[in-house]
Length: 73
Image (cartoon, rainbow, N blue to C red; front, side, top):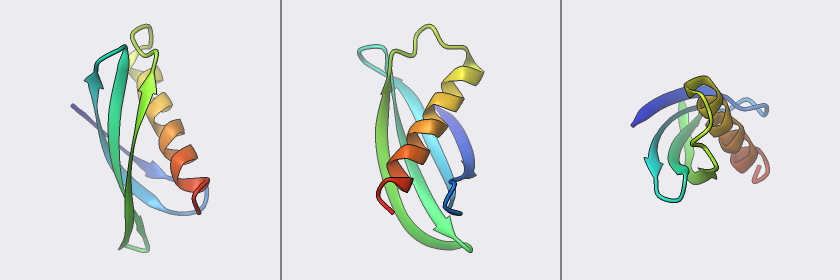
């Protein structure tokens, strides 16, 4: 399991965890806050990760988190 944190393009801070799963994928779960106030949680999955470096994997997870949250808000 690994942790990642960041800010989405629409201004929400998030903290997330991701872990390796089956079928060459990772599952992630993220908690979102705006100005320190809880605003929601989302989860997702990123596929085709076995050839990625640790940095590339983290960026792929962050991109998926961004896409999941921003497209809903």
